[in-house]
Amino acid sequence: MPDFTPLLKLYARYRLGVLKHQDPVETQTRQLLGLVRKARGTRFGRDHDFDRIRTIADFQARVPVRAYEDFWQAYWSGAFPDLSGQTWPGRAPWLAVSSGTTSGTTKYLPVTPAMMRANKRAAIDVAVHHLANRPDSRPLSGKTFMLGGSTALVDQGQGVLSGDLSGIAVKGQSAWMRGLSFPPADLALLDDWEEKLERLARLSLDQRISMLTGTPGWMLILFERLHELTGGKAPFPDLELVVHGGVAWDLYRDRFRPFLEQTRAETREVYPASEGFIGVADRGDGEGLRLILDNGIFFEFIPLSELGAENPVRHWVGNLETGEDYAIVLSSNSGMFAYLIGDTVRFVDRTPPRLLITGRTSYMLSAFGEHLIGSELDSAVNRAAEVSGMVVNEYSVGAVLPEQRRGVGHHLYLVEAATDPDAAQAERFAATVDQVLQDLNEDYLAHRINDTGMNPPELRFLPPGAFERWMATKGKSGGQHKVPRVVTDAGRFMAMVGEIAAAPAPDQG
Image (cartoon, rainbow, N blue to C red; front, side, top):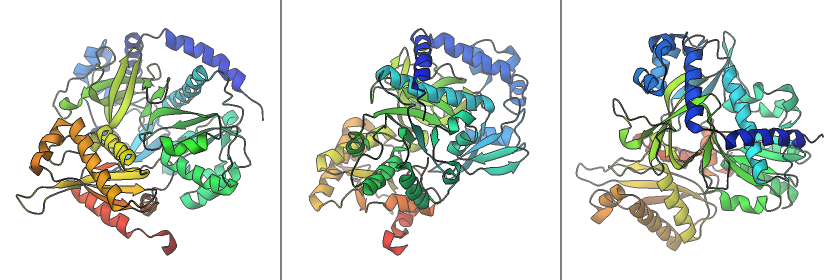
């Protein structure tokens, strides 16, 4: 097949020049005012006096921060499925279906043609930054393997389709890109993850794959199956780039190394959300994701201490601070304005803005006032795995409330390890998790002193594949579905514990 890398390199030279001279404040101001101007005739624009907005301060004074439920009740539910003129001009032909792993609430998020074009530009930025770091790479010398969920979409009527964002992306793919992509449509449509994985693995071995994208957990399962089929040989010897996102990479880095060492592939993290493509790693692994400032999104950031306040402080690129944990808020060309997407981030640079994803607002575990965020929990589990000499496939944590009024509760960790730990490893793992969290978080430490506010954490180790089998029972196998790392609802968490215990083992069908 033809190698389109030379054309990509020409564009990369231009794009990198633009980014080098980009002024974050000017760029983001232009993005917001452009969005406001475009949406001023919508019902939302009229309600919030968009015609009179001239500055960032004007916008923040007129448009309050909202969550999904607020948009759904006030603007989208009555018009569903055709949201024309509600918060963005024209029809949103697609609705991205997103179900919260902790709440279970199904969300229908508008995807407009403008957002689709923006997502395609952001995807090209990923390759641009890859070439900047690896100039001799040939990422378009083969096909891009997109390991997503089912691309089957549901016809909601009135010309609107709904489904996984990965399916929407395939539906909106340019004709010339289809010849450069894998899998073919008939396989991409499959809902049965086990069948899909097997067929994808076997068929992909006959393809020249130069890029692979997906969620780390499912890509790892694919690599393991490919190694079984090849007898340990490199399944994709021409692999140049592995694009990952959605969950913290630290838990997977070492487990991917044996597969990637058989290629010259580089890994690159991205930050795609159902609400828009937010950032991409432009430097090395773990050095932060660069905000995409000029692609139809205006970003705001609320300090976690302000979250839930009636009028929270709203920072933007003009006044954000490094080292502060923020909830991210965006306004976009999909018709969302001052929308709280539920992610938490921390900036490591201001010019250009680079961030680390630290978790979810719903993933702040504070059943007893301990105020733990996702990145702290990830750090504790990663360190515990290292100290105890274990490989952790996945984990989930929630609170176990005291049974008696004056009792003390604790955290329960469900840990899926590659092998069963012995008693000494399990004890070392639990002790390390507890100590790391005490070192990282003063509130947790205060509650753990003398077991006055919390008892030591409890661990239950699960057999390999336990989370995957449980996800299958929930209809969330493969693709973009992720194991909930933190479940804040204690009742829902205990129900999940029971469901995982009841999920059939492989020899039970």
